[in-house]
Amino acid sequence: MSLERVRNYLVTRGIDGHRIKEFDESSATVALAAAALGCAPERIAKTLSLLLNDHALLVVCAGDARIDNHAFKERFGTKARMLTPEQAIDLVGHAVGGVCPFAVKDGATVYLDESLRRFPTVFPACGSSNSAIELTVAELEDLSNPMGWVDVCRGWREMPEASAS
Image 1: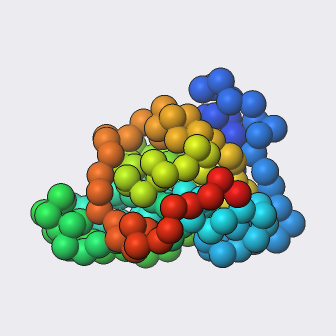
Image 2: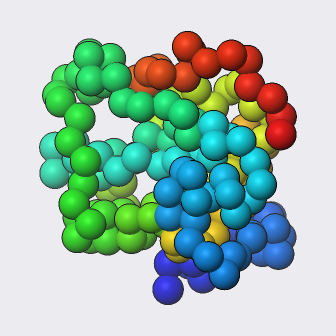
């Protein structure tokens, strides 16, 4: 089970597994996760699953951000293409709705988007469609082992300065 793999991974990295929140209801979308957590939607750290040269490319961004196709192509040299649900399981190891940057399969690369830097803490999923964990951005960076930070999303700069709610 993906959630248990993530829990075990986080524990090996020094994160108490009890920090993972599990919900009776789905948290598979930004809106559902924000409702379950009682936080602003932009604080959900959604993990976009994209295909790049037959490998999974994960971009973790704020809940109010969307891929900027021009910026993505400029950075990665190709058009952004979402993984199918089957590809997400095969290439990442997590099902759509629970994709996260932790305990991913070899070959999947992770990048963090600049849209996350606005917040002291964010809430990524934990491998299931009804889980999340609150992490500082520094913890997210440490735990996700990203290839680096990118600026490939739009929509979030137009928003007023986000609150920490």
